[in-house]
Every structure is written in C-alpha cells, then in structure tokens.
Length: 626
Image (cartoon, one colour):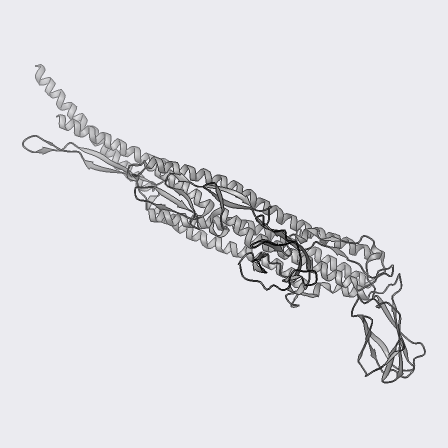
C-alpha cells in the first residue's frame, strides 16, 4: 500500500512539474531568444523486499533547454552582418535622397544658373539678365552650402551613434560577464532561462559590434568583435570609449581601454550597427563630401578663369566671380615638429579629392592614400619656388618637421561649404571680350577679321591698342615691327591676343586691335561663360563639369543601391539561420499541446493511483475496527 502511495505521489509531482515546464514554453512563445525546455524523466531507485526489487515510481533528472550551439552561432554571425548592412543602407539612402530629390539636389539649380548665363549672352547689357545671373549664382552657392551642412550633420549623427553604441556595448558586456560568473564552470547546472538570457545579451552585443561568441569548456562564453578584439573574456568585460580622430577632431573613433591606455579600433574590425556607421562614414559620407567639394572647386575655378578673360561694364578685366576656400591640411596631434603648410590648387585636371596622408621619414616626405594606404606620386621640395605637388594640390612648407610627423591633406572636403558669389554689382559681370578688332575703312582687299580671341589674359599689353599693316600680300607689320611673313589662313598673334583673316589682304590694308570700351553690349565672354559646364576640367581633361555632376549623383545612388542589394541578400541568409535555430529551439504550439494533453492524462492517472492507495488504506482501517 505504501509503495503504491509513494509511486503515485512521485508521479503526480513529476507530471505536475512537467506540466509547469510545458506551460512555461507556451507562455514564452513570443519571447525573443527563448529556447524551449524539455523535462527528462528517469525511474526512481527501486526498493528490495527480499523477494525482489519493487519500483518506486519516477523522478525528474533534468529540465534542460533544447538548443543547437552551432545554429545559435550561425544566427549570431548573420545577425551582426544584418545589423551592419541595415545601418549602412539606411544612412546611404538618406544621402541618395539629398542628391536625387529635386527639392534638395544640385542638378536643378545648376541648370538654372547656366540657363541664366545663356540668357545673358543674348542680352549682355540687360540689367535684369545680369541680376538673374547673380541671383541664380547665389542660389547655386547656397545649395552647395546646404548639402555640405547636411553631410556634416550626418557626421554628427555618426558621432552620436558611436557614443550611444559604446555605452550600450559596455552595459551588455558587463552583464554578460556577470552571468558568466553566475553560471560558473558548469553550464549544465545553470538555469535554462539564464542561458537564454546570456544568449540574448550576446546577440544584442554582436548586433552593435559584429563578431562572434565562443563557448569555453565548462560553459563560459567569450565574445569577440568582428576583428577579433575581446569584449568579454570569462568574468571580465572590456570597456569601449570614444576618442577624437588625430587629424579631424570633429570625428569620433572607438577605442578599447586597456591597462590605462586607449587603443583605437580599426573601423574595418567592427561590424554590427557601429561597423555600419563607420563604414558609411568612410565609404559613402567622406567620398561624397570630397566629390561635392571637387565639383565646387571645378565650377568656381573654371568659371573664374573664364570670367577673368572678359571685361565688365566699367571696362575693367573680370575679377573672381566665385569665392572658395583652399585645400585643408591638418597635422596629427602627436606631431613633435614645427612644420606647417599653406595650400593652393594647381592643375585642376589632376584633382581627385582623395584624402592623402603625408609622412616625413626624416629626410623626405611620403604620400599615401588615407583609405587604402597606396603610395601617391609626390614631387617638389616644399619651398615657395618648388612646392610639393600632390594630385593637383600645391603645398608650401614652413617650419621644420620631425621624423614621423604626419599631416592629413583633404583637397576638397568641406570646400562646398565655402562657396559664395564674389560680386554684388551687376555691372561687374564680365560679359564682353576685352579686345575688339576692326578693319581699316580704306582697305581694298577682301580680308576680314575672324576668330579674335584672347590667348593670354594675363599679358600686360593685352588691351594696348595695336595696328597691323600689310606691306604686301605676304608681309605685315605690328605697330611698325616686322615685317612678318603672312600666308593665307594663318593665325596672327601678339600681346596675348590672336585672330585669323578670312579672305586676301592687299598692300596698304590695315587692321586694329583695341580695348573694348566701357558699357559695351558685346556678349563674347558671356558665350564662353555659358559653355563652362561643358569644360573638360577633370580626369586629365576627359570629364566635363556637367559630367562630374552626373557622376556624383550616380556615385551616391550606386552606393545606396549596393548597400540595399547586400541587405536584401543578408536578410535571406539571416531568415534561414533564424529558421534553423527555431526548428530546434523554437516553441511549437501543436507539439506543446500534445505534450500537455499527454501529461494531463498521466497526471490524472497518478491521481487515481493515490485514490486507490487511499481506498486500500480505508479497507484496512475498516477491517481492524470491527
């Protein structure tokens, strides 16, 4: 009778706890990272009565979680990469929107500006047309500034993301290390919910930094970044902090605090959300800002150059139409020398906008690309007469460098934010050619002046009146100098100007070159200004300004699309990894319902055993009481 009672009791308690475990599974079906739990039963130790061993029912040997560590590791790797691509794609899409939306892009106001210049060429003396050019130029310059400020704001968001990310990484790492200490050296004895909690914390941590977790003997879990830096080792959590870039204080970097020192982490060694932010800054934000600056430099330099070749309505040679800043160069905060540099733009066709690191090796300067470390050709000594020349930028050094001193040259970064219109007086627009040519009234030949143009606007005698006289059909003089041999169709040039005669001059024919007077309605230079957007200014004279504008839009769009395509592919991979994990560890309601029904029936049967034992006991009591 007692064995029946004890057997029924053990079964009742075991099935009750099994039902509680099943209920726990059902209750946590929507809990992120939860692994279903399973009850393991075993027979209780039998009791020997002399004639044999009589069983004592059942007992629970373990309540364990059903988990496949390999599937969990695969999901961790996939989730970290997914978080990186989500962050990268989201930020890249925002930049793409800036340059593709008609309300914020450059293309629209760029076209409006050159349309206004083209309109000026049709009415060079019109005050309204001149004002329209200045207004359109101001709008274009402001658009460059707005885009540059928006890109700077995105850099601020990256900094804030790094600060918030570092704080969250430290919190998660500390909690994981604490749980490692609670679990100790025997993960088999740890509560399943505690193991799930640790896995979920690790998943969150990897979502910030990328990387993976490695299970050690005994159950301790160590966590490493994508680049192999330890975040959690046993019960010790590393501390992550932010530090300023040694060249660009406005940019933050991540660093590990180790033994009182801060070791800056390579952006390429991080994944997850933080890695996505850093990759966005390095592969999308920085190149876009540099290319926007290069476009601003190309526009301003080329337009200014052409504007210098004309004269305004005051009869003066054209001045700068646009203002823009010089290339930026900053020294590393650890430099020990006194060297400084002044910078200027040189050959625009060689300007590529890539950031360059200059390093002094003790005897000479070496140049490498900041992003790849590839060597960059460098000429010159750095003196005023022989400046250092790198990719179309000229640098003049002052002071004395020390060995291993470094400087970061940013040829075009931020220049777009400095673009402005240099003139406010409409009469200062140099729409006219600086010189005019005329044929003598008494000429008897058929020679006509054509193609009068400026070949060197810096020539001091460009606007000095000059007389060209033909002493014969094959000889001419310039201001009495000569004679010079003439052949039909040849170019006649002097003092920074040139022209070609159409037809045949006769002896005694004369021609004159003189300055364009003030108030002229001549549109020669306005026509040249309208064609500036098609000037082949970049890539060794193979890419026009208009082409560079289209290339910038394409560059940004391509980066956004590439990130989106990678994100879509990674989402499929992560979904598969999640499905594989859930196939083993996920809660299945049909399976749990079947278990619950089976355990309920077993529980009822165990209750019946106890009831039977009670009946047997009552029978004995009844027999004894008679």
